[in-house]
Image (cartoon, rainbow, N blue to C red; front, side):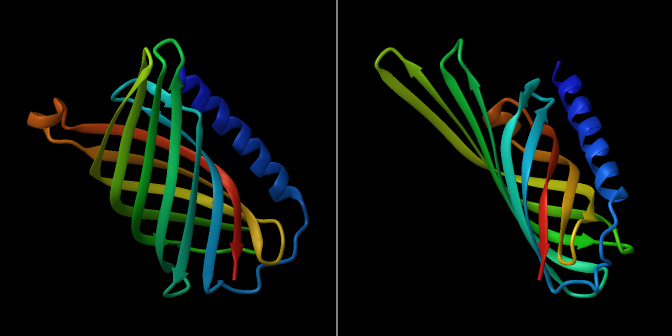
Length: 190
C-alpha cells in the first residue's frame, strides 16, 4: 500500500514540475552563493513496512564552485498508530556534498551524499502512563533531485533519496533500516 502512495506522490510531483517548467521565467543570473530550501517530505521505511506521510526537511548549501557545494540538512518524519496509541518520530541531521553538473535558465539537477545521525523515538500510552523509547544511530543518505526556476532567485525543488540507518545487530536485533524519502518544496538562492 505505501509504495502506491509514493508512486502517486511522485506522479503529482512530476505533473507540477512540468507545469512550472512551461511558464516563462527570467533566467537565473548566476550560481548563487547560498541556497536554502524548505520541503514537505514523505518517507517509506521498507524494514518495518511503514509509510510516514507527515514530514518536513530543510537544507542549506554553500557553493564552493559553480558545481560543488557543502550542504547541511535536517528533517523530521512522523507516524501515529491510533489502534495501538503509539507515536513514531524520526529526526535526522546530516551534512555532506552536493554536485550540480549543469544549470540552465530553468533547471538545475543535483546529486548529494550526506552522513549524519538519525534520532528514532516512540511514545506509547498504556492506561494512564506513557512509555518513551529513543535511540540515536549513524546514517548515510544519497539523494538526487532537481530545482526548477520560478523567479530570478527562487524555485521549486524536489528530491528523491535513499537513507540507511545503521543498527547494532546484537543489541537492536537488526542491522539497520532502509528508507526511501521523497520531498518537494521551495528553494531560495542568495
